[in-house]
Amino acid sequence: MKELFEIYDGSAEAKKAKGKSKNLSGFHPLFTASARRSIALDALKIWLLLGFVVGVVTGVATGAGAVAVLLGLLIAAVIYFGFRDDVYKKVYGPEHDRGQLPLPEEMSWEEAVDRIRRGFANPEVEQVTDTADAMTFYSKKRGTYQLKNTADGLKMIILTKPSKSSKKEYLYAVFSSVLLSQVIAILYPEKISAEQVEEEKAAVRKLFGAHKMPLLIELAITAAFVAFAVYMLYPVLYSDNARSKGVSDGYLSTFPAGATVGEVLDDFFANGTWENYEQDGVTFVHYSGECVSTQTGEKATVGIYFKLNDDGSFEIDRMTMDGETMNLLMQNTALSEISNSYCNDHGIASSNALEGSLDELENALSDALADSSSSVSMAEPESETYTEDTDSDNSAQTATRSDRKVVSTNGMDTYSELSGEISVDVSHYEIGEMPENVKEYYLSYGSDFDTAWLNALYTDVYEYSGKYSNQVAWERFTEYMVFYDEVVDYNNELAPAPALYDVYYAYDPATEEEAALCVDDVIQIAEENGAEIQIW
Image (tube, rainbow, N blue to C red):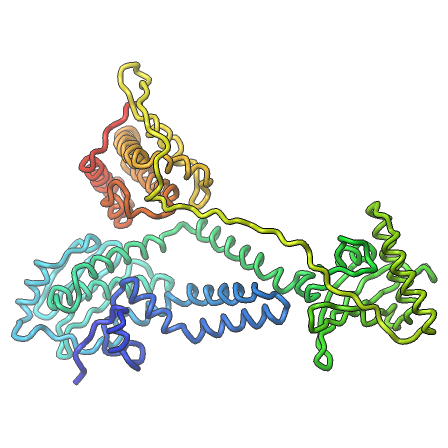
């Protein structure tokens, strides 16, 4: 006999009750924000930690410094969003062991059916039927689901799915779980609150809405993410600074002041490359480049080996030409030639660099070519202080502009000037492309922006439905919703007509008839919130 079911809502009490339960066995998981985040993080925590550690270790090994942490977070984020849907499919699907879900004590199946019918409400479910041992929920967009009264308690199963795509499996799993949540809330109101049910329904609408994203936009987002990853990873793994452990961006006293080691060497040598390695606990950095030998006139490969010191400085350990180690005289002559070449190419006086080289050469001769090395220190480039501007909350921004009425083209009526601007601007920007100055302009009108936006939306949807078609009017409506989200940076909790978002997330009309019903809802909601027709 299975134990009675429990509810997992992600709260501290639920986590404590869960204890060591594997895969939430015996729990019905809610699809509220706290619950689904807790479930995904718990299921992926080992992989997230592993990805973060790999990113940090890779970054540290390549000399990325603090960027290593960002690399670790990036890899963890890829793992989280890449495997989260698989977790949803497993935990929220009908196969998940929720424990025993019986009918309330002394309640018959007929009484349960009657109570469910009277209390059930979901705009995505168009029809509900029942038999002697089952209730069937029909949804054109979400599929067909059946609540069965078995000897082991109530079970929710999926009968049909609108799409056979494996990528949508998790959507139907989540929807079946949310339907079961509504049934539990009706039969056991002390287990699941009405607020939690509404939160689940809203979350599912957003989940399906996000999955409907056009392929082109999805590919664009993927490409942007890959570009960002390359942008982050390249300086971490492949830049000269990373591979040279910072030597390429450092400074040598024998080179012109203000010019980095990398700049001077790349100016003189062709096909320069950096690499680093450990030897006997000491880190060495090797630079290799090609030049023409002044002695033979033939192409030669020169290698410069830098040794990193514990205090952050570095020094030249040795130099080679075609694999043969240079003596100190040859080394200093080569360094002087490299420095002078950079000065000549950039019009810089070479006296300081040349004097340094001559001093080293004189010391070398007096020491009879003793085995020593040129010691240099890493110079610290000047630091700059940056001040970050902080954006104020959109909802708290004080209005600095006021809307005004202007005369319409018929010479008799007036309309909101701001509504007219919004009507023109609403289709100009793709998702994420609205410039900050445009957002600031509209937000500077304060509450006048909300009023003007609602009036413009109402006017255009009403006009488009009569002039073109209901489907075109619906597309115009979605443009307005995207526009508002862009202006307020998706902080739409204070939207002038919140019910419009319910329509926006709930519907996706495929025919003119379906679009007509949706457009009617939009117009009715706008009118109920005081929208006024604008005569341009």
